[in-house]
Length: 340
Image (tube, rainbow, N blue to C red; front, side, top):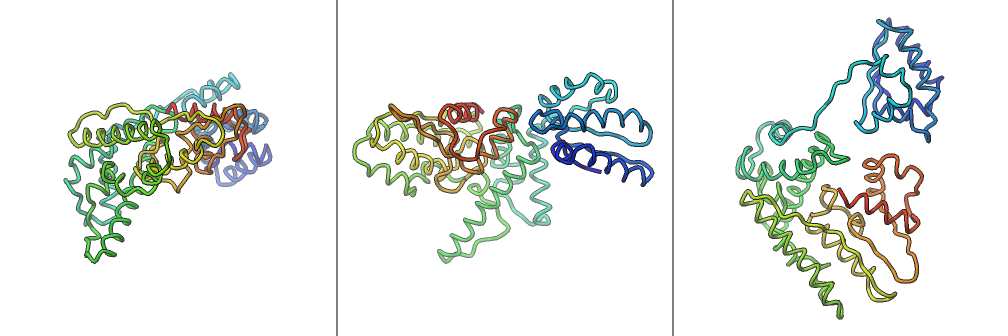
């Protein structure tokens, strides 16, 4: 049977007893406890359940197998909760992150399976553009929240989304595109230097009065993004680039307005820091700090970023609300997130 630490903590000892009873009635079996460390989380109050399971591990040797799974750092704290855990579960199997060649093979298999081997990839299944896809993904390896196969599935979904948008656009223009063809732009996204020419948010930013230094800073960032795109095509490492900005100024100077435009520009370019590609308009606050003079300002977090923060920084933000964080906690959350 499969369950999670949070689910067991919520159901209490009674829920754990029910699972064991089902297994006993079936003659034995195995319990797969995912995110087991949640039982030791003081906010979940799963301590009594964990203590109960420790006793049952001892009482059901040879009858019920307990398989515990979780993230490395979280599980270290989990085992510190009770010294008896190590003696009852003496074997640990380490699942390492996938390497680039493995991610490439998985992506190839995903595409072949989805389209029954009929999909043609520009540059080939083992070509430059496919390698760029997995190299981008591999750069996140070792960072908190790197999802391996899950992250690859997200990347594949983004590729399929770009292809669908292209096919729709080309049909509207009177062409007859091939549904079984993945172009360079489908795989790695369009050239940022071309996207910016058709970006309404960029045009609106340029139309604003003054703000010459702000415009120049954002233009410089866009140029570096375009440079990195070209470097990837030449099989060179991209130059490290920070998208984070601090906007300073008195009330009414345009910080919020420019912040929204900046977020939309990043979304249109597909260069959001969390690597998940394009988000809905004005929800790109993961790379933006807005600081007002003489007063604190609450920063509104979009739901998707809220989920990402919760997943990637478990334990730090267990008590914060979805919206309206206080200023200090907002800056800390964004600071931690932007360091990814």
